[in-house]
Amino acid sequence: MGRKESCTGGDAVFLLVGGLIGAGLALLMAPQAGKKTRKYLCSLAEEVSGKANEAVSDFAETISDFVDTATSRATEFVEERANLSKDSKKMLLSALDKALEKLEEQRKKLEKSI
Image 1: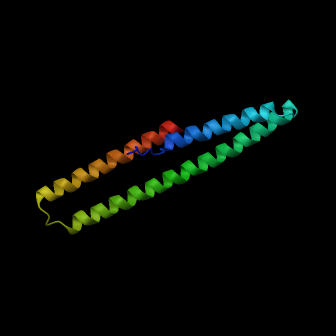
Image 2: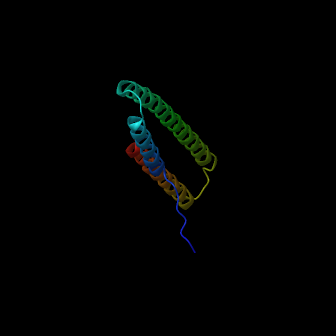
């Protein structure tokens, strides 16, 4: 059986950057005046940069909202379940710690891809 490949955020960034480099080189080789091409590339870079910043900002806001919601729900759950055994509480805290670690890993991956 074949191995399933998955595309990570870093792979998508490399694909996007590669596409932009290829497009830039194609424009540089195009039969236009150099000044006009450079001006176009500059405006294109500004546009892509703006869209990328907006996407990262939206993603960060979504993650922040998710963390806030998860934290409040976990707090509510713990408060409502004050009668849980100590082992159950330890298991819940362990699961929350693992979730925070995974979230931190994803944040670092995103940071590296910027």
